[in-house]
Image (cartoon, rainbow, N blue to C red; front, side, top):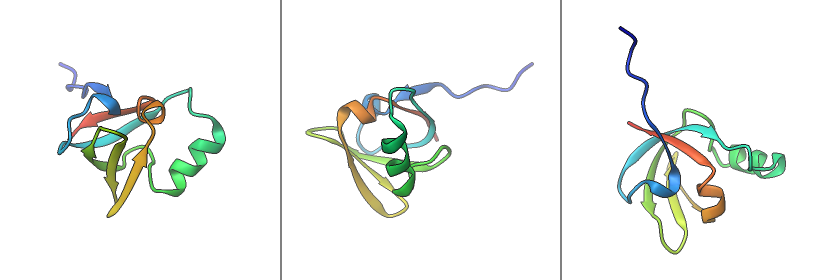
Amino acid sequence: MSPHKPERLRMTGIPAGQKVRLALLGEAIDPFQREQLHAYGLTVSSHLQVLQQQPLTVVMCDQIELALEHAVAHELWVEAL
């Protein structure tokens, strides 16, 4: 029997208050933007808490609040903790 693999969801589908782990940065994120996200601490396996989804997606990452455009948040794949 294989271990259960967590379901991956887009960040934009996660309700405020939920904690998640970043699983994948989508292909549509260009290399420069990917570097910026990494500089802010958004790397694969980072633990995040979604604070809000409107008007922007806001997440808490390592005690830092980050506001993300929905186009960027839509390309972030996460798994529930």
